[in-house]
Each structure stands twice: as C-alpha cells, then as structure tokens.
Image 1 (cartoon, rainbow, N blue to C red):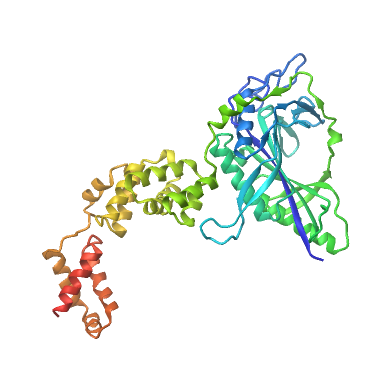
Image 2: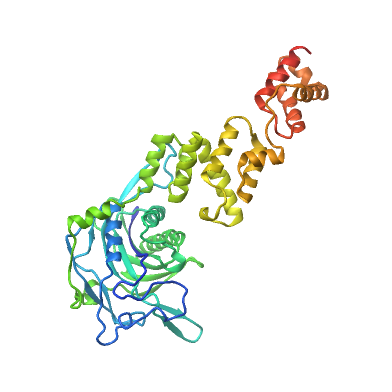
Length: 483
C-alpha cells in the first residue's frame, strides 16, 4: 500500500522586546543564571502581571504580514502543568480566543523548475497566539538546574494546518517564516539561542485517504536542518511500523540531530490535561481599526513579493533573486547600487559572487563592511565601460573591500586600469604575439578563425590583463590581414 505523509508544525518565536511579557524586567540571552527575574516572573505571592503592549503589537504585525484575521477581542488563559521550568506551575497563554486566525506562509516547492519564479505553494495557518516563555533546564552529570532568565519572555506560537507533505516542504516553510519574522523586526529567530523553536506533528495515511492518521509529535528540533532530517526519519519509522503490521501510537518523541535517532518521551497530552481557564488577573484586549491601521503602515515587503518585483523591475535571473530576497539589508544594498550604476544585473552579480564571498572569508556582516553601494556602483561602471577588466576588476574589488577606498583610486594606484588605446604599445604586443605563435598564424591563414584566440592570450598576459579585448581583437585582425 502506498502512503503519504501529513505534517503540521508548531513554531515558537521569541518576540524581540526590551521587557518581558507581563513584567518590567528586561529580556536577554547569555546572562548570569536567574538574574533576569522579579516577583512576577517567579510568581511570588501578591505579584500581579501587566501586559506588554509592544509584544502584542509585534504579534498583530506578524499576523498582518501573514494574512491572518486579527481577532477584535482576545483574552488570556492559564495553561496548567507542573514542571520545574515553570515557576508559576502554569503558563499564561491564549486558548480559545487567540489574537490571529488563519493566514498562510508562502513557500517555493523544493525541486521546482528554475524558471522565472519556480512553483510556489501557500501553507495555511490555523492560528497564532501569544504567551510567555518558560525557563530552561540545564542538565549536568549528576544534577539538573533551572535558569529562569528566559521565563516570561514574550513568545508567539505559530500553528500550521496539517498541510505540509514532505520534510523538504517543512524546511521551506521554516526558511520563509524565519525571513518574514526577521525582516519584520519581530524576532532575530536565532535557533541556537532558543529564539525560534519547532515541534512537528507527523502522520501517514493511505494515498488518497481523507482521514488523518495517528500523529506523533517530534520535539527538540533545534535547527531548520534538524527539522527536515527529523521529519524524514519519523516518516520512515512510521512506514516501517505499518509494513510490519504494527500500529502507530500517539506519543511525543525526542529526535537527536547528532545521531539521527529518536526515542519515545511520553504519551501525547490532550487539551483537557492542561485545565485551561481564563486568567483572573488579566483583562481581555480589544483591538480596534485604528490600532490595526497604525501597524499596517509599518509592514515590510514580503520576501517573495520582493522577488516578483525584482523580476519585473530589474529583469534579474532566478539565481540572483533567490539569494537577495532573504536578506533585507542586502536587498537594499543591491537596489542602491543598481540605482547609482544603472546596471542591475551586473550589480547583483558582483554582490553575490564578490561581496558575499569576501564577507564569508572575512567573517563579517554587511553592516561591518567598509564597502558601500557607491563603491560597488563605481566598480560596476568601470567594468561596464571597459576601463577595468576581468582579473584586474577582482583585484580592485578585494582591495576596496579591505580598505574602503574608491575603486577608481585603487585601480590607478595599482596600475590596473585597462589600456583602451590603439597606439604603439598595443600594436607591439600584438606583433610579438603573432611572431611567437607560428602554428596559430598558419591555422588562421588556413581559415580557422578560432586560431586568433592563441594570440589574444599572449597579448593579455603581456598587458597584465589591462588590454581591452575588443581593441586587441581589432588590432590582431588588422595585422593578420597584412601578414
């Protein structure tokens, strides 16, 4: 029997705010354990929560970016469970009245044809709700210690419909979602710091069957690559169980990305296990149109919308747009370079194959680079005008990246400007090339036009790459016609 996978993701994203969700204490990562706490975070008697409006703004903004319906009223609920990472023994969350409903995440299907845009798919969302994060357990050889610095940090949970069909689609979903959250200023989404975490619900069913199979939750997927690998592993595990005539058990499993193995953690909890009830210390929140209008004015361009615009405005190839759209700052750098130089395709090529390469080698970010759009635009203009050629242009770029000098000044200082004249120097190089290559001369006289390339290499070497190829070709043909 043929089976198909059905996958739903629950993505937790820490919201980038100065203070915690219901407390004025600051948020942060890497601080001394248990220093970012106060009576509210630790749930000491008499401490009362106060909602962080900036966090709610961020979730509404995220919902608008993803096309969600924003609820006119949302409320706060207590999700009760007993575990050391929760100092209250409950978590303030949203249950039956979340702030965002519906929406979608646009992805590009893996393996799609690399035409103008490839094949895209919208993964529908069920909801986005806001809650507070919990603490972190640190396990050592003989004991486990809890750090409450993370507890109370604003956290949104983005829940997809069970509409993802493969591990690669899940990878594309998270890549697109992370870019949206980062470019919207919602979160840095650094998975190593726990700012973005993902659980996957996976089931299989006979091909064409409408009813969902028994789902298994996969936890501790702490990188996008591990999400993809863990889902692929779980699909194979479930298929093997079914092939043996076994039964899939609803459970939560732990996936180890280092070993590629998973193990059962516990049976899956149901909603009633958490005994949700409205939080008596927090009032419901009403979101009016004025509030929404203010946030809509600040919405950024979505990555795939930017890609469609780059295709239309700049006629960039897929290979360029698929790199640029995921980094908002890099996209702005490109557009400014293209505006100054008037050469968008060449500007994109230098950014992707030059700037990103140098940044990677130097281990620096775009903000740390000495090179600016004006520098790159000047380089592009020099290359487009034939004043700077091939290897020489790469040498100039590397020096501009290192020093922050203007490309024209660097080319002049290093003597790398191309020679575009047809004077005695170029003629001498061409005559020497013809005299040094009798075989190429013989082949050319016999009608083999490609033999001229044997002379060109000699000339460019003598000119240290500074000779204009068009001028070299013209001069060689003129001299050969007289040979």
